[in-house]
Length: 230
Image (cartoon, rainbow, N blue to C red; front, side, top):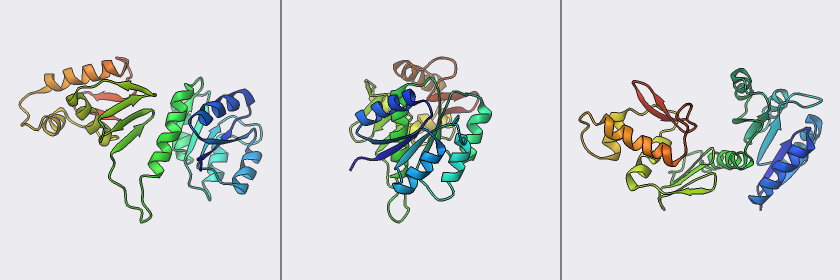
């Protein structure tokens, strides 16, 4: 059975655009134009995930998110034209799992939905985290078994070393990994001032991922400390 996604946006054109892309990915979609409609729909049939616009006519998306979190645990993504960090922080504080601003890439949005569903499904019935062989981070998909990497559906051609670097950083996402740790775990050798080796591989990896030099989206440098994927 197709996973069901609830899309709540008072701009019907945007909601229907999101619907088209989600359906192309095999999802079932319910569209609601108001918070009241959304609450009623959730009572009738709870979705597997929800995408909430912040600006709704009867209740803002933050309040709707907070209301849903009183009894529901499915992933919630906030969708808004406002990009201020305070709005992002507020959305995450209210219980949202992710936040994307307009204008947005529909393929990135669907990738983020799938990533949130993957995160939920990482746990078995006992609540134990399953050993991960596949990672999906905001549209960056990595398979350890097949050594295949795709970014927004486009396959990347990486060397085995580049793959190992990316896998290690993504496996440790949210944590800063030093150049020494990265070298010793990927190269399997003692670290002897090999910062240039690590830096050159990171640079080639970013180039293949088309990462901008300023404000890269995936691999971020924490100067004097190391690298992190958030």
